Length: 134
Image 1 (tube, rainbow, N blue to C red):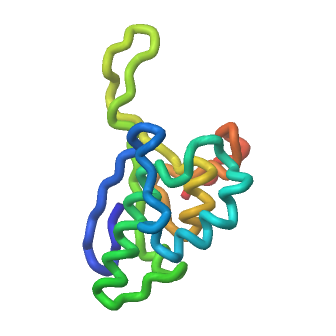
Image 2 (cartoon, rainbow, N blue to C red):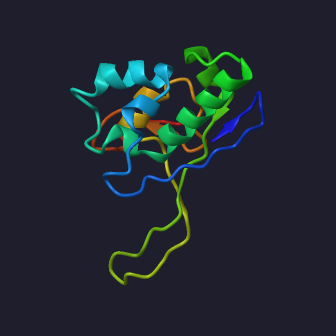
């Protein structure tokens, strides 16, 4: 993810189910959104495990260190281009080329203002009816 104001780039990786952002390290802008959806998340995966949320979290903390806006409006200055880099063909168990990854419904809610190169799903399960192109 890139911050278009600062030029900073952070990468994130989902990792295993326990590879979550510790709540005390969650930026207040994202913590407020997390608390609003944690009881009834729109997607079954752990919200704080997702790569794009991890990258946005780091970028918001960097903005705070630099004295730049780091509230909800700052999210519109971030850009996401998320990929599944380690997919395998499930029949043959061999690596396949990286695949574009739209935001899941959790990330779409957490990062509403962040443009996503490959779109976003607004519901679960992901399908053509709940996919937005940005």
